[in-house]
Image (cartoon, rainbow, N blue to C red; front, side, top):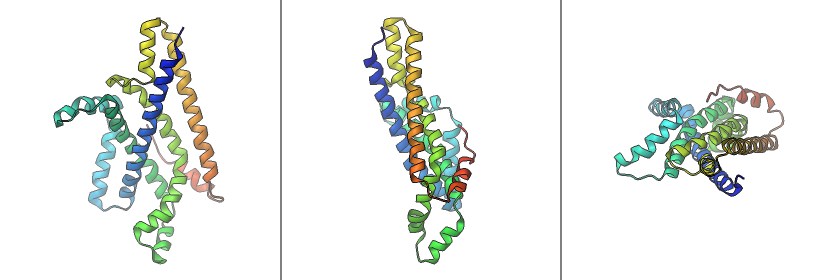
Length: 225
């Protein structure tokens, strides 16, 4: 019978990866989005190259580049750190587009009004633009959560012992691939469903009355994985 403890261990590693990837993607993605919307042309050009690079290369290839390529720069990245960096930077490229769409959906008059009241550009962005943009970004961000969670299954290719690799170890011992993979599929389903429900609750909790139209505009922003 399939042991549940290795799968629990793998699930914890999968969740750790997911949280780290989303955190890195969020931190970098917001700055990239702000640079694309408010930055000068040279900054916009550099950000566009970064964003298109990480969105154009398959996640598995990025994992190999970071894991095997780090030695060429005198580094020795662990499998876990390689996965966090490769998939985290990839997520930041996608999240930058989520936040860029959310920022651009906010009426430009709000920035003009803030500046007219004496606010500096950074202060207006921090106090007026970003709080609204983050609310608007929650619906498409739930798609990113689902995508990142599933991308963590690729980390086994560079040696990270997450849910899929733990499952492979169990299969070698038990010769029950169907039972193991069905269990793994159910775990991913529960994690995806629970995460989306939590984000939907957060969206409802943070919703501002009268802002439904803006939310619909943010949801309809072009976003492809």
